[in-house]
Image (cartoon, rainbow, N blue to C red; front, side, top):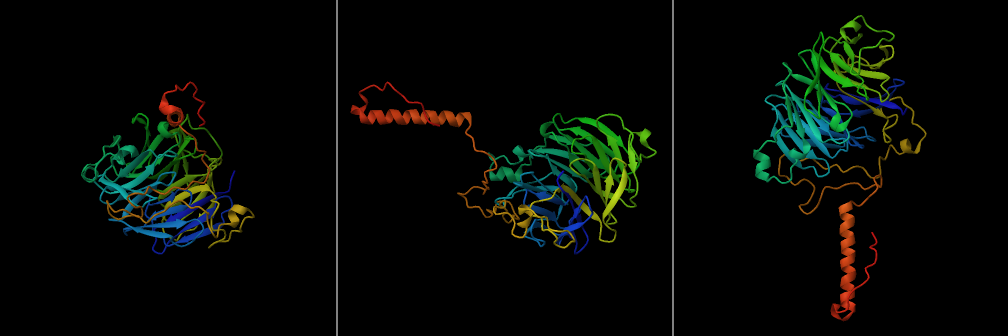
Length: 430
């Protein structure tokens, strides 16, 4: 398994984003100037990090190889939650007014904004890999699923985009108190979505059918929710510091260190003293990382369900966001921490960053601003050869027809104005 790192964000004034080695608990890097709220921090494509700033109408962007803010963008209102597609092409932000904003990363244009909730947006998440669906939850207890293809419909006029709100694909109103967290599992169109709320419940939904599959009730309010990469287990972080684990594929099975409440359909991981604000698992699901309001971040061994080590101690402000991933190639090794720089060509280039970074333009504050792209230009893309270029069947047919017509025109021009019939048409070279 690749080296796993955990990024921990805090909302304290003058806070930062710290990067830790999950396996050893070593501080690797620190990214300065961050005060992101809950659900207000995410990864932007392969080259950047994005965080909204608590109580401020601004977004901060970082690159992996620099510890200071790379770029700032200003928004109409403070963003309560942010999310980005897996390829980093689009960014969504949710405001305290209930409005959702969509930007194009390559051009910086504000593509659309619409009133999605009656109260503040508390959570945003795109579906994994494809990013074709955007899920939003708010303080109005409603969870909505938006089809990105409808939101970014290019056939609509500017007047229609500004005056007409898109229609959600699904609207779920089963919760009775504000929604605190949303997680989307693997599987793209057949994925499940898990929503958590202060009403002490987690609800599991089918994205393919839009129906409620299962409802789970716990003894405390739920502030965060996560599943393992295979969607075999669900983890819910509660307001009393407990973490509840329940199986999604069958009955709860035993293991070392199991709690007393296994008969209730879930296990309880105890050890935290304040609300669990965020959760994340390693790629092999062997370890769980939790962040709490007192500023602590703990790594749990899921075989024994016992805490292994502490990544961050109390006193640095509440943990508001937590990401666990394979170590990025351009992570600033040893910057602000005690980590040693690995001996590999990928990590040795961490000071300069990638040669072809993903396009990142300054974000427009208002709809209709051109951004950095001229009217005759398209959004810049990086062609690095990672994806082989192939013609579609329709394009191959057009090339064949064009080559045949071109040869016939040549024959008509050469032989007496086309009086001589053309009996031979060579095989088109595609």
